[in-house]
Amino acid sequence: MADITLYLGNRNYSSWSLRAWLVMKRTGADFAEEVIPLRQPDTRQQILRHSPSGKVPTLDYKGTVIWDSLAIAEFLAETYPDAALWPKDPLERAAARAACAEMHSGFMDLRRNMPMNIRSSFPGREITPDTQNDINRITAIWRDCRMKHGQGGDFLFGDFTIADAMFAPVASRFKTYGIEPEETPRAYADTLLNLPEMRAWALAAGDEPWVVPDFEF
Image (cartoon, rainbow, N blue to C red):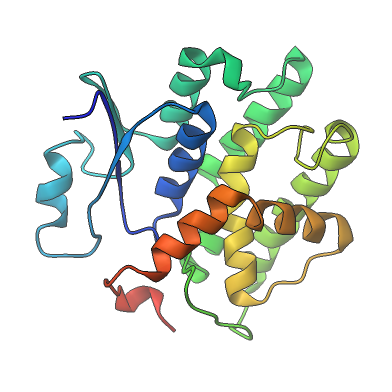
């Protein structure tokens, strides 16, 4: 068994798995991956073998289990400081954490009405007013962070941070559902989608055999 194992849901659908995986990849550490297909009769049983919450992702780090995406990201930032997963400036770091926390706890209408589905395309799907409000708030975060903190690079705080990992699945959703934000958020979404790690994840998602009917429209 590997010293470090990240347990994931289907790459095609599991946005939280993508977030943790991106942060793990950015550390440069060697780790094993195990995908547990979602919405199968034995899914919960299989996940409970590794995660006390019964949810993925979960990280087994040398016998210590961390079972939430944001907790995994924080742990990796502390364990691999050279990866610079948070901005160095304390005020920027606070802003990045606030953006992550808002993504972690909010935007339920976007999640419910536009679930992540990397290999499919559903342009023209009806956008409810509440979902549009979520889209507006997310693009405002992107625009404000890029303008205030992102001048040193292509990401929200210049260089890639945990905040970018948290919003990467949203960029995928925008592509799937044909959402066209204004110039600055659109350019940022393109930056995320063109990351080598995102391209590798999308290729792997396309090869998966599993289909979740609730996420296909």
